[in-house]
Amino acid sequence: MTRISAHSKRTALLFVGHLLNDGFASFLAPLLPLLIARLDLSFAMAGLLGTTRILMNSLMQPGLGHLVDRVQRPGLVVIGPILTITAMSLIGTASNYLMLMAVMVVAGLGTALFHPAAAALVAAGDHKRKGLMMAFFSSGGTFGGALAPIVIVTYTQAFDLNRTPWLLIPGLLLVFAFAWPLRNVLPKPERRTHERFRLGHLPRRFFLLWSVIVLRAISATAYASFMAVMVTQRGGSTLTGGIAISTFLLAGAIGSFFAGNLSDRWGRRWVLFGSMLLATPLYLLFLHGPKLWMLPVIGIAGLLDLSATPVGVVAAQECLPGRTGLVSGLVMGLAWGMGGLALTPIGWLSDQLGLIPVMSAVAFLPLLGALAILLYREREPIATVSSD
Image 1 (tube, one colour):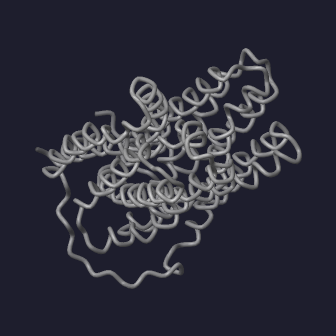
Image 2: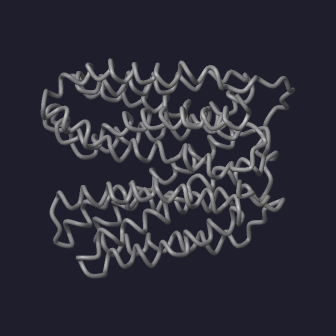
């Protein structure tokens, strides 16, 4: 097996792992109505569950990514999905709020371990299609998040919320199905010394890039989270709101392939600039344009705004070679965690001023990020990919 084919197979297997991990991790939101009714939760308590998982995920990722870089044990990538699947499969058996909180903590820890470990494996090697490979890997998580509501709602309606532990069986079998062949295409651990890491070791351009990714994460997370409410406020049905969420996420997954491939050819900065620049008018058109246009417009907005995720990850990894686990944790974890934490003030402002006006202001965040990325300088030009 050649090095290129081994890397492609490894990325494909990690795509499956990403789909499983993020799919199971997305069970909370669609099950919240059932959990609120069963345990008599307030909306604040329900919101804290999601915040806890986000905090565990985002705050732990940089440290766990640094650990992945140091210990050089590629097999650690399997532990994350096992933790996430096990925890979220037990969500239906939680008989009190503390048990639910424990489920969120373990699931957040599993995701925090998987993301930097997997992203480091995708980036391993000297291949020229890092943007495309990272896009393919990233789309696995997006597809998982888009499919999860359909799967878990259908399952609980056909059986019962108490039967979620049975999902452990197919979940762990699927983990085995991707982990067993993965062991044959893992890169050999590299023996290298590691200096103690400090934030000062990060180049200045990384902080600019990270800030841009945070702005994009806030806009994408806010629109994905409040989309169903915005659709209903504009006269759409609850079903239309759910379809809008799936359209937004699935279009983002598809757009990742185009963005990743284009970034290999044109450079990371210009793809980030173009995708974020065009996202702002599409968000505004979704909020204020004709109702019949809502679904196609939000699909294109997701294709643009969400597609920049793998491009930003690869650009960050290129800022600090040899620290791919740590950098991936800072970008996929901490930056996206900031987007999740921003939901609380966005929700509070929406209570005071109205959801549509506040989300109209949020729509300008990608434009702000697009202007900021113009100051970003890639150290080396991206090599042109040959046509073969």
